[in-house]
Length: 77
Image (cartoon, rainbow, N blue to C red; front, top):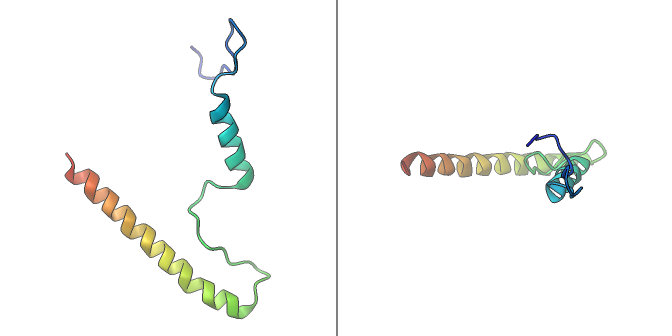
């Protein structure tokens, strides 16, 4: 079966319809990145100063979680 086929050649049923819809939705929202609190250009200076440490804490937490996931998978073998 060809991976590029969108419909069944016999009955016309749409293959992987839900998966394609989810991928399209995520691409429209640009939800393929790590969710980090964004700093907008229009934000006032005080808000930018507050958001930067929050971003750093978020990244540190993602790194710690990633390390524990790595550790647990490497020790599971």
